[in-house]
Length: 113
Image (cartoon, rainbow, N blue to C red; front, side, top):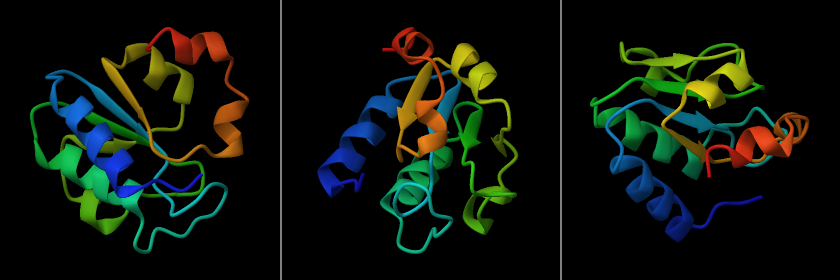
């Protein structure tokens, strides 16, 4: 799935309305790769993190650490347990639909829609 600029802007606007925990899923340029160069998803996560109004948890199955643009921010962290992150989230922003996320039961995602 490639994100269009309008999709990124819509996701960012939706996330801005919340004041609690945000969870961003996927930072790569496209599904199932570890390439973050020119990634619209990373740009959305950076924007959400820039608001500094809440904790931002990032799930990216192809990253061992956060990209440098996010790693220096105290309120942003990379998570390993995706289901816990979904359960605790006030808002979930699906940025890149990696195959890994398809293994999570639909009911888990629907609880946040």
